[in-house]
Image 1: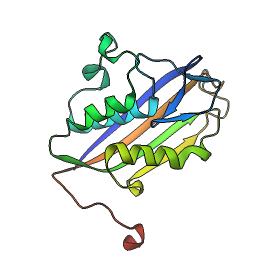
Image 2: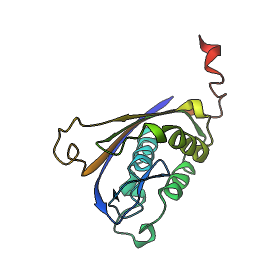
Image 3: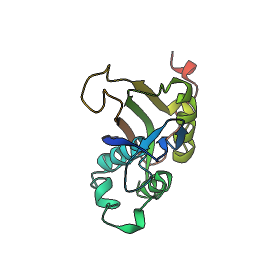
Image 4: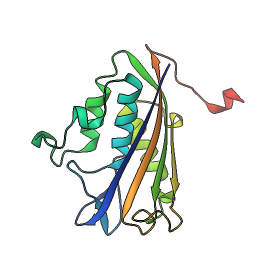
Length: 168
């Protein structure tokens, strides 16, 4: 098994879409970034690269390269998945820290999107939403978003975790 962590932060600005896990969240601002700015997918990519010990998102998709300008982060994730080199994803655990809007109504769609792109079961993706409780500067004032991710990889093909009822 290999474990990787990922972390990303983006400022929120007018005129951009707020994308989390490939899902557009209705809001008056979105992530600033070289690509579409999906902070959650960027953190997942970093976690995958970390688990494989092959650098980070900036190594593989540098912002200085115009090929990645405004590209969908789903496409970046698909490219990252192509580098798994015989590893399979066991699970992905995500935390998004965002003052507003509330993410609870969108959690299922985000989990479904990530599971679909990664070709893993919905039950293998956890997404938790937190606020900064009005603290932590730009994050607490609603001017930034952070994502933290942990990924577990297995070497070779493995069975999925199946029905959670089988584990209790």
